[in-house]
Every structure is written in C-alpha cells, then in structure tokens.
Image (cartoon, rainbow, N blue to C red; front, side, top):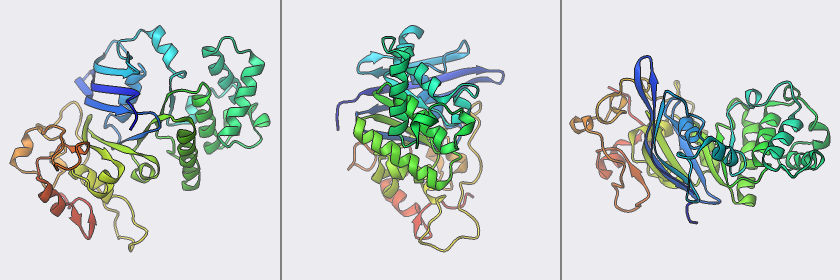
Length: 344
C-alpha cells in the first residue's frame, strides 16, 4: 500500500436545524492511497455524501459546524480558505455527482462546459487547445464520435453518455483524487457495468485515488479495494473488500449483504430486507444506533462500542459491535448464507 494521499481524521459535521442540532457525520476517519478505490456504503441519510462534500468545502454555511482534519499530501483542507479550495476543486480533487443531468448546465453545450473547467485552472491554455483536450477526454471515456458530440447539449445525450461526459470533465485536469457519488444510479445494468469498467480502467491507468459512494454492494464488489460501512453518520465497520463480503462483523453489514438477490438460488417470495427504518439524526437512540433494528441486541448495546478490531487477526478490519467473533459467526448465518434474522 502506498503512503496515504488523502487522510481524514475525526470528521464531524453538525447542522443547526429548526428541530435542533443534527450531527450528519460523527467521527469519520480514513486514509486513501494512490491507485486505491475506497467504497463508502450505507442507506440514504447515513452521511456518505456529506462526508465527501465536506472534504471539498461544499457543506460550509452559517448553520454548519465542522470539526476534524482532512489533509491532501499534508495540506489541510477543512481550514483552507475559499480561494485555496477553488484551486483544489477540479484540479487536485474532482467529483462526479449523482445526477449528471442536473450537474450539467442544460442550456450550454457539453464541450463548452468542459472547456470552461479546463481554462478556469489552466489560464495559459487557449480555447482551441482546451477544445482539443476536451475531444480527447470524451474519446478516452468511450463517447463515440467525440468531434461531433462535443457540441451536443446535455439533453441530446443518453444517461450513460452524460455520466461519461461528467467523468471526462472530472478527469480533464488529471486530478489526484476522484470522488464518485453514486455514479451508476438510475442507469440500467448494462450501462452500469460499462461505467464501472471505465472507472476501473481510468483508476489503473492514471493511478487515481478514488472514493466511490454507493448503497449498492453489487457495484462495490466490482471495483473497491476497501469498504467503509456507514450508519446514522458513523462508520460501523471497515475493512478490505474480501473481509467485508466474506467475514462481516457488524449486523448492519449482514443485513446489507442479506438483501442482495442471488442468481444461484431460487427466487424468494419476498426479498430479504432490514426491518424498520434508520433513526432520525435529531433523536438518535442511546448506544449502538442500529440497536432498535437489530435482532441480536442485548443489554450492553445501550453503550456505544468503539470502532476497533475485535477478531485479533486483521488489524484493519474494525467494527462497532459488542458480540464476540464466535457469536457473530454463528448468528450471521441465516438460511445457509450471511444475513440478518427477522427483527423481533
């Protein structure tokens, strides 16, 4: 593993709301190295996108309070000024947002928007050269006839092509870190596979450090090296991809894995699911926040466990669950596969 390029420590993000203070992210820490793909997974509202956006300064507002550190090659980002962050965004850290149709300006040609992004950071590059680079980037991400497509408007491109155009814009300045926030949402499975293949190839060719945000563990399995599982603003489990999929330690992770459909088994009458709903961030339960939905909760779960390695073998595989490793192995087996029992 290479030395960490991006290091996040103790990230906390609070928002002042009409209902009271809301902690959207609570103590998130991770390292990201060149060439590595880190996946952050969890249900909607778990804090995945807020974590990524805070690193880029996109959650700064009068009603936001941010604590912790996020350093890019030793340069602190959370304390950086807006002028300093503008030099980082797009140039050193690029982000692909969830919906390309709303991320692109609908009344401007796609190529012009990429040219603008290039020239905003490379003032010495003329418009003609920037357009040439734009055509090259569209070609590199697999858009056919890039010389013609460069003059298309967003609505003239399919969903998959718009996402490719967003990836081309993000990579036009050769950033060190790429943040992809649900890049395959609302795309059919064939296009999803193409986008994942593209991200995997670009990551390998450019030695990108990539953060992939997703709620789809099938997507994560295709591309990630390491996984952070978030629930109610906290990381509840982290580890290498194989550790998360084959030796998960937290009941919430069992529920996510158990919710996946299996092609090698008969179709169930009802898809497995995690009972209940995530708690309101304005009124979190005491102790383990997954406790009200967990069928294995017991008395000690009213205390919040630290995120730590409990198995003793893989120091990088950490979780927040009071069950012993033996109890976890026994209780996560549901119907011959990893899953979560029906909640009581």
